[in-house]
Image 1 (cartoon, one colour):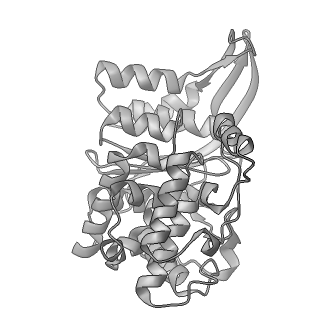
Image 2: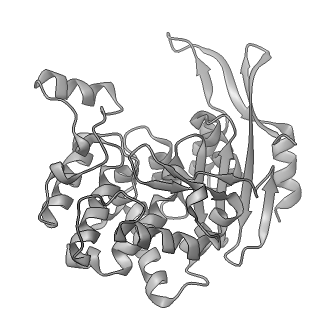
Length: 342
């Protein structure tokens, strides 16, 4: 059975494209508050779970041993745009662990914004692993390896002690067994494990509230959450959905994108965790889906409502900046949210 159509893309007065997907909203006990589509199908969460992958860095005491500040902890959870501030912060994280960019195993990547790429070209430089959108996460993994006293080389391999620690945390938070048969390789070379959306939603509910977590883990989760909402620019960058939402909501929510149309989030004031997947992998549709959910579940002030309205119904523009159409949640999606939510 196909997942429902959640986002409609128009041009003129006609529908031009449709995006199907699935959504899970859960509390920390695993009770599903709202679901659309097949939330039991296994999906690769990709970078949407970086905040959870950073828990061993904090829980182990490594973040304190390395004297990581909020901006650096946020970068450990980031899919950043490769801006100068991101690359420099990743470099400092490595220096604190006595390492350099040569120790990164994530591979080089051009910055996302043209102006940042141009800076490299004009100085006759090429991108390094520091510009990789996952460099902060990798710097965190390397720092954890150093504090653990284990070999740093090969830290991206599934059997490495760092990746074993990360996998254990993910199993405990999602309640799922992450075996080799559901293991893939992420774009930055670390293991990524497919698991049902319901488990990711539950994990982010616990992450945002601390409910059901041992005191040390709850403290680690709270510290990571606060780092991300205090330094949202480090989590993403200029003109990015995650940055806009976390800046606009001033600590009320944490949202995190992942490749191939995945998004996860926490809404602590409601005790909710959110996980969603756009079937065709479109980030543009996943952003509309997440914005629509936040609009449905939260009481909004005027500023928050205006922000979400722009994200729920983004314009499709011509090259000259003239509106040619727009994206919007489908009536089916809105009706399902209204029926399921208090």
